[in-house]
Image (tube, rainbow, N blue to C red; front, side, top):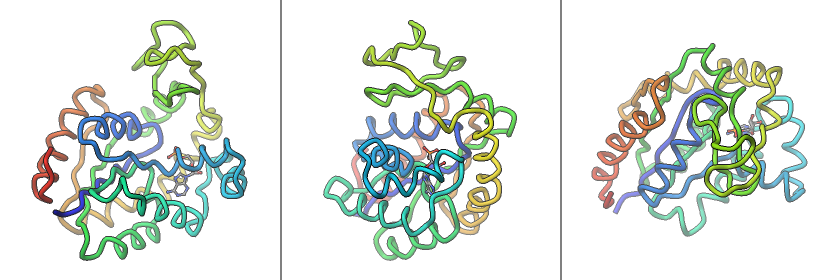
Length: 224
Ligand code: AMP
């Protein structure tokens, strides 16, 4: 049986986390988000979290060596043996190359780009709310909570991520354009890059993703 590695590429706030959570639930593959891993390290006050803090809060990328160490530790865990869903990784060409080396002869990843115009990206990130307790992602406009400030999923408190403040969002967007967007061309040079118009509803994006991922899982010999 092959290993199913799915990479969700796209700008901040485009819906990678929302879709990855849903895909994780429907496929049983673990959702591996480097942003979530850094936030966990930060809230536990680990040395890695403290090293990453300044970069994260200013909207910059954490240096590749820190990211790679953390990511490869995570995907070496038993729950990733069948494969995993990557959200927020890779974000630079050296990260993509390191992943390629690690997957050589092991898996050919499916790469899906969630594509959205810049103006919309700012609006998405600026309205995003994340539950402090369960990590559920909502949005002031696109997935408004039934009760203001309260998570629909668990009743916990919804918060805005520190790096979703407008001044940090525009920095994250320019970092994305400069360092991560070139990965679309990097992966576009070979088979396996798919593109989804992310301006549509979360449900229709999910439907299209499920079709792509289902076909990929069938190819690598996994049950959907
Ligand atoms: P995210 O939740 O994916 O938006 O990530 C939040 C922040 O964590 C980013 O703005 C970066 O500072 C850092 N980060 C997450 N993933 C990576 C990565 N693959 N490379 C470098 N920095 C990352």
